Length: 447
Image (cartoon, rainbow, N blue to C red; front, side, top):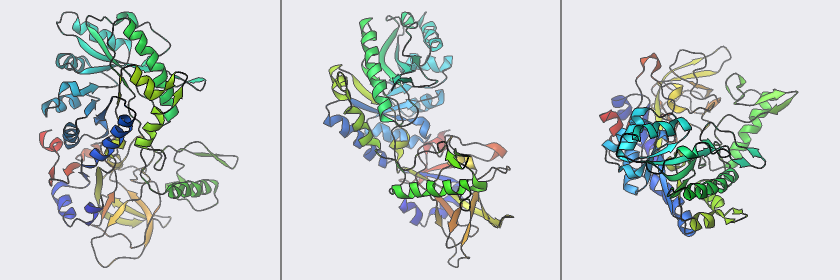
């Protein structure tokens, strides 16, 4: 990422391919995957990572997954078709799409791609497709509603662990359960421990009625940290709380609360942003889960004794260090409050997930040697709405900002580039550039 900032070709690339430009480098995936593999290997647990492709559409990342011998988690028919077209073995795919059409299910059945069945209607739809076919379907049963610390974990995904009415419709002659799967929101390791414990009981139930259950898949949500210094993160929230209480000037646009609120002088609620600093992350987080003790032994011991492979589907944490987004400054102006508004040739959907903001400091790549005075203000985007801010945080630029300067957003490969990208106003989608070979990613060439 630092190399991109210093690369003299950066402006040339934006002139050729447009602003914003997503620049990806799949190489760090190898480090991130190996960290997870080592955790499982040290505990003698059979283990396999599947790259959650919904986190980034670039095909160079799928190709890197193929080189590294991991699988690919697909969430749509197009994701499946593209993977097959570039040579991914169907045995290395799993389909976890939240909504599955008949045509998507047909591809999975015909190509023997494992389907994570989410509900009874999907189960019946697969069974109907197999009724007059010589095929069988490999499936994983997605479970939800796990019990944790005396409460049920709410989710819109999966069969409830407390019901079994669907069990009779699992015909072993056509629908073969290869695994048990779940997806949990958030990053709390102890919830995964509870879910694995209850999923292992379902493995026994399914095996007892004739299904050769081979794996348990714990989905994604592997945490990562964007910041090295936790004090930066804590300091931001301390100052933000002060601003919400009126004890200092706002540090977000119009004092945006970022998910919090003030009641009787107290700042309450939880931030509606990713925890950009957190510990433990990735491998240490997984190690904590596997080493957790239950009444029947550690999670690692139980998975090994059950002769199961542990699978997971990380996205963000696999792409840590794999990409940046760069945009060109098109204007600067001061608003009525005296803050500078710095207009970028991009829109807010091109560096955003479903949370309120991406609170990581951007990097300024200056164009002119002679700099203007320091300025403080906000990065704004191209959509014609009052809410069109690229970053809600009030930013200070000690060396000012000039038209034609570049602003680089670090570490955006995981979800931030593509998860919400939009073509409103008929703006083109951002191009995706492979830094290793100096070419556009195949997703922009083929599709």
